[in-house]
Length: 334
Image (tube, rainbow, N blue to C red; front, side, top):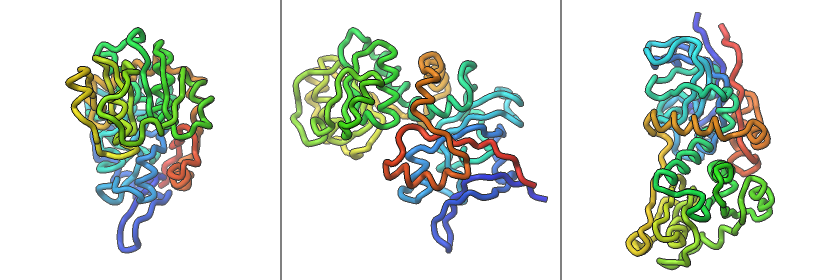
């Protein structure tokens, strides 16, 4: 008799594109070298696009979405992990090309997963998720280029988004003076509570601008792209650094070389999906040391796996604030 587990499953066939909470055969999941009981996953923007079909995220069908997961190893063909180990995963095409984390069981390559830091629970890791992980990668990039709290203010664009809000919180914890930009100025008080010293309207950066603007910031973390990224680069002080990790405004980059050759600034691309394991371990260790449990509880909500599909549409509409953590701990069915 086939053993199946509850999962979010996306199909595309003669009946159309659809996502549902249903049974999925375990033998179809167990295709990689490390099998995992999933404790928690998340509902990210990319997962919501996949579930609703609003974006071309899913490459193969049927697909279990979920680009993040944290759980316990139940079987391993790898010398790196053993039964009982707590592990986490972000990216590597999981939930797009490979079956993902929105299921009570998963199977991952040992090359994709890392040990869960000792002072984080699986739920806390997913409260942080790809958003916090990407923010930490961005901060590490600034640091490795010599940016310190003494260098000057750091600009964070898309401040109300997952990466932006984590970046503000983490930079503030590290002693940086943070300036935030947002399209929702009614959220300015919230951003200041996170650690922003000043909050600017995104309109100051989102329209076509000049090749060079007034030197204001020592560095920046941008998750917006397009004209915003171009204007951010034009506003960076001599020798400053910008990290680019998103494209909320667009994939284009309508800029000039002026800030790079006249002010010697650097633009660092931040990829979270295919990042080498050593970088992942470094970022997650830093996160485990910096992030406080009370902050995570304040910025996240927990839903059961059975409600993931229903919440995807609300997430895309901007009706959900903060992180959505999905409890995947449900019993297998025989």
